Length: 178
Ligand code: B4P
Image (cartoon, rainbow, N blue to C red; front, side):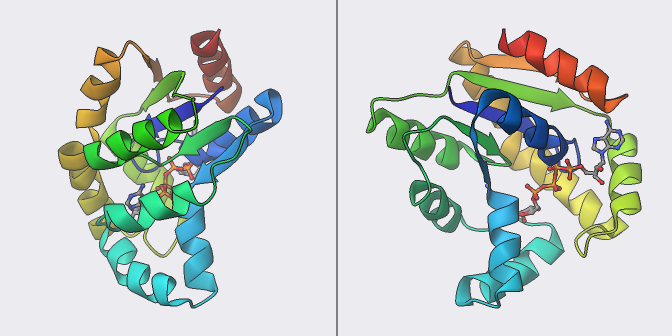
C-alpha cells in the first residue's frame, strides 16, 4: 500500500506519519526530514536547501524527486510532505508505474490557518517564525492545493478534519484508509 499525507505546513503530517508507519508497516518518506538531514550534514544540497526552506519557499522539483526516486523500495511507502507540486505528483505516478505500483490513498489533513500558525510558533523550528509561516501558507495555496483536485479526479482523495486530539485524528485517518 502507498499512501500520501497531504496538507498545509504544520497540519500534522509528520505527527500522524509516525503512527501510520508502525500500524501499516510502511517506509516513511518525508522530504522535509531528508532535507533537514542534508542541512545537518552540511552537504552541498543542504547548503542549497537551507536558505530556500528558511524563506518558506519550495526546494526545486528535480532535487526532491531525485531524493524520493533513490529511496523507493519494494515495501509500501507513506509519503509525507511529498508531492507538493503537480510536477512532483506526475513524476511520482511515473516512478511508481515503472515499478508496477501506484498510489492507493491520499489523506488530506484540513486545519485552519490560525490554528496552524499557533502550532508552528509553539514548535519553534528555524523555519517557524511568523513571516516564514505566512509565506509557507501562501506557497501551499498556490502550488500544493492543486493536488487536491489532481487526486480527487483519480478517486483517491479522502479529506479529514486535522484539528483536535491526536487519537481522534488517527481514528479518522484509519477510517479513511479502510
Ligand atoms: P515539512 O517538514 O514537510 O513540513 P512541516 O511544516 O513540518 O509540516 P507537518 O504537517 O509535517 O507538521 P507537524 O506534524 O510537524 O516541510 C518543511 C520545508 O521543507 C518546506 O517548507 C519546504 O521548504 C521543504 N520541502 C519539504 N518537502 C518538499 C517538497 N516535496 N518539495 C519542495 N520543498 C519541500 O506538526 C506541526 C506542529 O503541530 C508540531 O509541533 C506538532 O507537535 C503540532 N501538532 C500536530 N498535530 C497537532 C494537533 N492535532 N493538535 C495540536 N498540535 C499538533
